Amino acid sequence: MYTVKLELAVAVQSSWQTTRNMEEGEVLRLDGQPIEICSNRVINRVAYHDKLNVILVGTADGNLFVVDPTLGEPVYSTKIGVEEENCEAQWDFSVCPEKLVVIEGSKVGIRSDYNGILLLSSILQTPIASCSDVVQIELSKSEAESLCHSLPTADSVETDVSEVEKQLKAIVVRELEPGTPLILVKREKWSTVKLELPYSVLKSTFQTMVNELWKKNAYIPQLSIASSILERLNMLLPPAKPEQDAPLEKAQMWALPEKMAQAGFYHSPSSNGDDRAMCFTCNVCLVSWEPTDEPWSEHERHSPFCPFVRGEHTHNVPLSLSFATAPAFVVAEKGSSSPILGKSSCPAAVVVAYSNGHIVVWDVAREAKVGLIPSFYT
Ligand SMILES: [Zn+2]
Image (cartoon, rainbow, N blue to C red; front, side, top):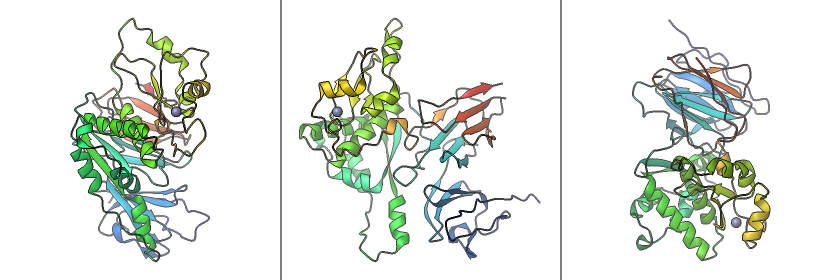
């Protein structure tokens, strides 16, 4: 009989210990106590997420459980990779750069932590081809609750805002009074809300919300949450291919993503795919970047009263450069129904081998878009 041996790194600083060599089907134990969820399930992978102090437990039925080692109970669970038929999603957690990698078919999803949790149920959302496609945007429960208070009115949005409202308001926010059991507090923290709607509906709703809040000069948390959702939506729908002779490549060379993001800008090209960049806070919109332009000084010059420029609290999270919310990647060479996720001697490199002979090496140490280096060997 085939036996799976699992090893779990033991965290030095905490008081728990875990069975080191679990055989398939054996109950996962913490300090000798079995963990409830794992009974009746075959565990096929265990990893310790040092930064978040949680144990990631994968089961043969495709679920991923997040277990709090101090409480010895799961705080979150999700089914990973259910979209592609005959594809078994696999995941791995590379300890060094603290990224969780999930592969399914031609998709590769990578997650770093998002304010102390992981947005796992949207990890395999890939970029889309059309505005009418349905996309998933995952938010923490507190963000979703906060957005409910600033939703634009139905007549100010081109698309139907009621469905967004319905999905946001479907959440049940628990009252966390002093004395609430810690496990409930943790579960509340890990709860997320997944908006699952056509791209165009989400885009027009949150664009209107940002515009309205900005007009009111309302520097409230909702503004930065809605702005970051817009930024995530922008990453899901790549701009239309520019005209052949448009001087795009040259123009975009000056606007380096990392520098731009540090100065509060995100790329929001118009339909001809130009280098238009917008500030996530004040919505100032700058185009035609020159090689001598410094993003910070341009921002200051064009929008001196922007709260971000003035260093006020804006809840800034430079999301476009983070795996915390980045969309999944699609490996161009399809026909790869049974990829294998492997490890290399370099912890920052994740290796995926496909049945058609391709091996793709992902550099997960750096952040999305800027440093992702897929390499192909056949
Ligand atoms: Zn600004």
